[in-house]
Image 1 (tube, rainbow, N blue to C red):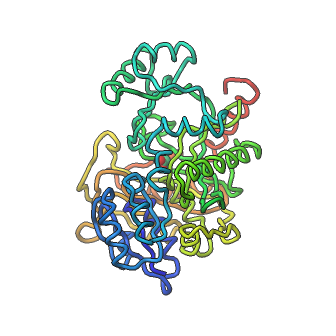
Image 2: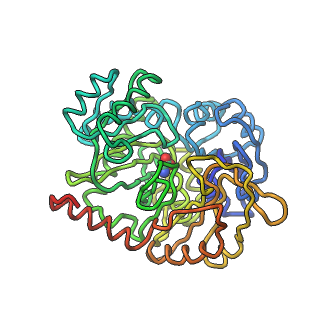
Length: 444
Ligand code: GLY
């Protein structure tokens, strides 16, 4: 098979590893915003260009006569690259431009959900003035402030977390009103977050193991929001703080949204839908949707995906997915991103460091490259964002966390850091106890 892939981060390195599993059979062509040493190692050719340039993307993949293209990041989806590839006859795994609004326009998402699953949203309102915002806050109490467009996961701020007073919230709302003339306010939800992704090929859906992502920069969810510092999954594919009913409701809701996106856009949904949910004492609610695999969650799930991922993606792209071919290892998984010590406050480029990837692999883990390039000798060099990740599979995230921490204590240079708490047994037990307390009506 001749495989096409768009993107150059950790998510795409994990996708490339899975898609290129049949080394003898397949070839891989990559269109990327920068060279990723892990992807370059697997690719027959990489072209660096703008991810928003749909014409260049079509030209590259048409020239290589690929059988299908898998899209990693959101930018090409929103730029219409999927529409252009399909128009050129290239089957593609990714949302078209109209469908990608589920991610790019939070107001579109809330309106669509209000039509198909009204109970799935917290109380929300698009406000155009400080006065409207004050009235909404008076009505619902604490809110999350959400710019309607894309902010790289860093624009949302929540009262009680980043916004400590009503005045802080109103000032932040004013900032976005000055820029966008409207901002979305949502009732603040209390509970546990989880990520449910689903492979969708027309109306055939294959749910992916549930993951929990950690967006905050530092342990105990302190500091600024990041693209995601790591994620874990459990061996049973769910989370200990979720009931079967919670998960069934999430899957049913996703199916209804995929159906609605197909109807509204006039084209079947062939790609990945990512639901970011909060389970609360009142049941599950949607925080947001992404029209793609999450990052870091993709690193977990692409590592867990067994069998022939290239065939699965080819089938999704052609609307011929057979769910009997989608298997995930019955293991837990843990991914931790390693980032420059100053991330995300500063973008540190060109910092050279040593990292013994052979030792990581000898310990049973895999290295996923992201915002990094090879420097001279055995050194690597940061490109500014999340540098690289370590991922492993095992019986329980807690056990994986212990051995990953021992390994990183030995290998990680002082100029880089990661979150030690992600996946620890103690953290997972705390989350489960907190959710149980919420269900009993206690504050947790
Ligand atoms: N992990 C969240 C995201 O990919 O947006």
